[in-house]
Each structure stands twice: as structure tokens, then as C-alpha cells.
Image (cartoon, rainbow, N blue to C red; front, side, top):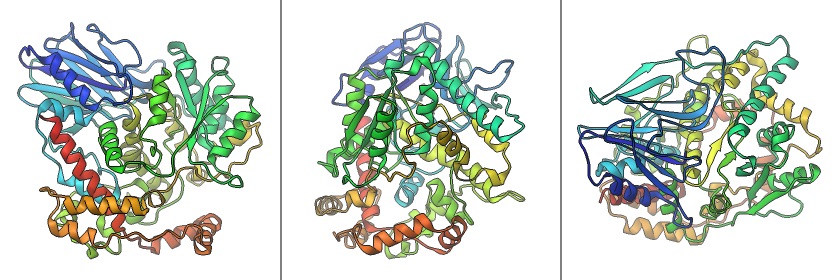
Length: 567
């Protein structure tokens, strides 16, 4: 599903359909011909199903809604399905719902005496409950890390659906309950490394085969880069007859001819396999930052501040939607790289840096946000007898994926639905059967990619996406942010806090072409991993006034957009 809503009213509501359509029209992308469908359920009384740009037919008789993919595992009973998905089931007396083990696709719900709302859009909830009570915990984490923190929504009354639970809303009791439930998993045993790699590839191939049974491959697109993850998906799919004509795509900025980046790698791989590549170019700057922020917030609830891959204001996704693509096949995985020696490093790795992790946080007036954040304890502490690798892997699936990775799905699901064939619990548990010292740096994906590669294209491509600092540190953007902060007037940030950030904000050219910059990058790429890890453990970053400024602007805009939706 794209943006999906199931809402139950306690009493009959005459104008329900028009109210729901109005809410959807508020979040629908402006530059595409959006399809908004709303049906009253014939299964559960006073219940409505609404969808923005559905990838399959939905009607009044729809009872099962699944977005993403699930694995077919024989003999699995009384367990939740494995896969990367959310699932909603409408029954005659209740609504049951759950998400996958990693919460890679998010669901949110709201419940009061008059209505129950279940959706993958926080903004839809706000529009339909007609009130917005901003969560200051969420603000604090967004300012310090660019994410919304652990299990936080923007509205204090909106709740996140959590993994390993079967939820149920009972019409009779008018209550939401949840039951801890395990997930079905494949047979993850193997006897040697060769068998492990074969099983990993097989798990992935199964997802492709199942999807091809229900979806025409000409409605799918696979983004290809120079990295191992997307390349492995391409190599596996290309072995299958059904996927011989799978569309490949790449987007990024245009670099110099002598730069070997993801864009150049993707073109070389496509050429080696005699495939056509949809080659999109992103602009090096955002034309209108003010209107861009509005679009970004409405598209994905502003759960993440990483907008550097969308500098075209989602024009690429508008084109894919216009060309009738329904699914984008992404290389998201439940594995990570590197090691963390302390909680501060771990917070940075999973995307929830605290204000106190920065050496200069006291140089800004931050109102009560430091205290609020310190009271919002995130349980990331390393367990007794847990190795560094086991700790890293646990934090990645329990924090990084639900907080950060799932946010990227929200950003584009108004246009196209994400399929992540390697994002399953079976993949993860298979990987965990390896000895801890064999789990580092996604070695199994590297090995498989290199084994299957016939292009001979190098795996050392640089990124073709601008960094956030490089994107925003221009005179034009700095001037916009300063003017916006000068005019800012809300009950979220004090005048003193706004001024403390604004007075430190100024344009200074980046030294990205300097010898110092190149030397630092060389050291990063060539230092032994353990030495790099120990250096990082001793190093303290600062948070820039530029970073705080654009995040404050985004929060202010979100506050206005969500409040406007309640009218």
C-alpha cells in the first residue's frame, strides 16, 4: 500500500467519506494525478478504508491489507509472518494488525471515545482527529540527531505499532490490546560457508519469485549503484527468467569525468549486462528551500532530516509514478558495519545523537530540550556478556531500522511501494548463525556480489549524492535560514534560543577541494578498522549552527503544517 488508512467510528458518521478524502488530499503529492479511494467496509460496521495511490485493488469487501512482502514458511502456526511489511486484517468484530520484526514499514494508531485510526501517515491521524499536541521529546531528538528518537511520534497522542506484537482493536470493548508473538523463520542451519552463502541467496531469490507471481515485472524498478547491496539484488534477479526485463535506475549529481562514483558504476554495470538504465540527474542545489521543506514534510512526516537525495523535490518519483511503476526494489538490509566502543558511538551509529554527545552544546541556548532528552531514556546499554559485534547488530535491528531506515520508506510511499528482499528476520537469523568474528562489514554480501559479478566493475565507487553540509552551505540557503529564524515566532522555541543559533550562523566556503580535506578522507579510508574505531571513541563532534538552524526551520514548518491539517 502507498498511504493507507483504516478508521472506525463508534457511531454512524454521515460525512465520513468526504472528511477522509479531504484528509488524503492534504497529503497527496501536488504534481501527480493521485488516486484517492475511500470505501465503507462491508465487514466491520462504521469502518472505512482509504488509500492514496494503491498498488492493487481495494474495495468495500477488502479484509486483508499487506504492504511489502511476506515469506511463505510451511508449518508456521500461531506466529507472525516473516518479511518486510505491515499487515491489517478487518474482521466482523475487530481489526488486527502488526508490523515486521524490524518495523521496516511503520504503522501508527490513535484511539479515543469516538474513533480508532490506523495508518502509515502521522499527518493523516492529525487531520482526522482534528487536533495536534506536539511532542517535545520528538523535537529534542530531531534537533540533536535529525531523527524523531525511539518510538516517538510528532503528536503525543499518536502511538507507534511495535514489533513482536499482534495488535487488536475490539469493536465491542472499544479497546486496543497487544499480545507478544514470535515470528516464523526459515530453516537457518548450515554446515559450511558455501552452504551459508547459497542459503542467503536462496532466501533472497524466493522473494523475487513470489513477487513475480502477483506483480508484472514491468511495474518494478531496481535502483542500481556501485555498492554491494543493490548489485547483489540485480545479480540474483537477473538469473531469473521473469526479471530479464527489470527496469534499472540510478540518480545522483553529475561529477567530473575522472570521478568513479555510483552513477558511473551503475552505467558500466548496465552496459556490461546489455541493460537499459534510467539515468536521472539530481540538481546540486535545491531551487526553493522554503517550498521544498513543505513537500518533504508532507511526503514523509519529517521523521528524518536526510533530504540530500531528493534535491529535485521528488521529480524522479513523480516520473516513476507517472510511468506506472508500483514497486521500487531496494537493497535495505538488517546488517551494518563498523564497531562502537561506547554508548556515544552507538547513538551516532543508530542515528540518535544526544545534545550532550556534542562538545559545543553549551554554546547554544537550548531551552529545556536537553533536560527533556535526558529524561527520555533510550535502552541501548550493552548487555552483560554481549560482544561488541552482538551489541552492534542488536542495536541496528532494534533502533536504526525502526528509527531511520523505515523513514525513507515513508518519504516515497505516496509515489511507489518499497520492496526490500533482504530485509527479513530469516536473513538476519541466518547471519547470526555465523561466528561473531565472521559477521563484520557485511562480508557475506561482499562475497556473494563478487562471486556473481560478471561486469568486472570495481566496488570502490564514491557517492554521487551531496553531503548535507555541502548541499546547504551556500550563501543563498544561509540567507534564507537567517531570514526565516529572524521571523520565527512560535511557542516551541524561545526568542533567546532562536537568537543564539541565528547569531552564529554565517556563510563560510567549504574546504572540500583542499589538501586538508583530501588528506582527512584518505586517512578515513585507509586506517586499519580497529585503529579507526579507537580514534573515533576519543573524538567528540560539534553540532553546527547550520544544522540546528535548518532543523529548527523544519520543526517550525511541521508545526504549521500539522496544525493547518486540523482545520
